[in-house]
Length: 288
Image (tube, rainbow, N blue to C red):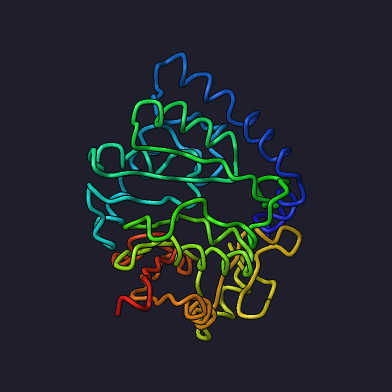
């Protein structure tokens, strides 16, 4: 119950308040990391990490390497691919890609948090000319109060630009109509033979009751084919029924080729699982 009360209190704060509290909370350990030289050029301080775990530089890079391995193993990422990172955040995935993509490869990333984009361009983008990060002022009640609506956002890239498109823990923090538009945009900018990789919280009829009632990390708020963790902050966390996701993909001429269930629905990680969230691999229908 404590976790539920904490989440309710946390989500009741504004995005700016959450950023400030996070910065203050991690300031002591960030200070000691700095004076001890336990920092990495491309890894921000814990207080500046607003997505995922606020880990030290060693664990941050370990997480980055894990994501790279997932992309190589699951969508056959190549060193010369042109890739799009949806929700590039604070550069967690991009760091490992700097050592993987060659001079013929190209990385584009965009995010809704300006501080993260500025950090990535000033560190990674400065040293790697084939890496570019773009700030998009899209409203998200978890991260900002910007004006642009995600359901109206048009990806700023030419049709058929990317070999691979990926996102980690992005569609877990968006509303259904916003995700639907992103699928439409992915279809536009993905090459005909391209592959996409995204993580979700997914459920089906078998485990819906369990994820809605369990004590920790539950989704009690029921919607039409989806469930929310907190109705007050609709972008806090969302879980989508697998049938709903299939229909959403189908409406944008996309098709799921593989779902790899994560271990978030279990009490502990199993040996067969490779990621906390559920992984979805998809491509254009016309490829088949």
